[in-house]
Length: 179
Image (cartoon, rainbow, N blue to C red; front, top):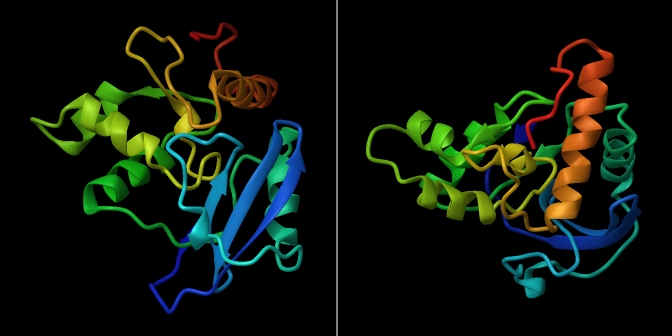
């Protein structure tokens, strides 16, 4: 994932059909800035999406399709993420969770240092503007239970199953799922 420096934003968006339903993809100056499911929570600011166009999103559509088919484990897309310093630290940690594996909000909090509240981490995870690309679906509760996901728990489960199946085929995942 390549993070581009801030520039004068010229946003545009498209809507892609996927096996998980439609997703709205937003870009600014060639960098991916948002990937949202219908009824995404929290609701994104749609006025920042710019005009709709189907041009210039081929790389996103292709890589997202490959990922959802179990043929891709890493996205190679330029991204520009906007958030607080804390949010960006959390998103960076999430990006480091290996494909096919999960972590907990508590583990992420410990990774950020003493005194970090897992609930604050959970709130930052929820503000992730690039679901799937920044794999917040890999964050689960401390008991192994699936917890909130902007696209809904069914989508979160499906994403984890896609990754688990591919990792299992490659010999990189335990045979039993924890969620």
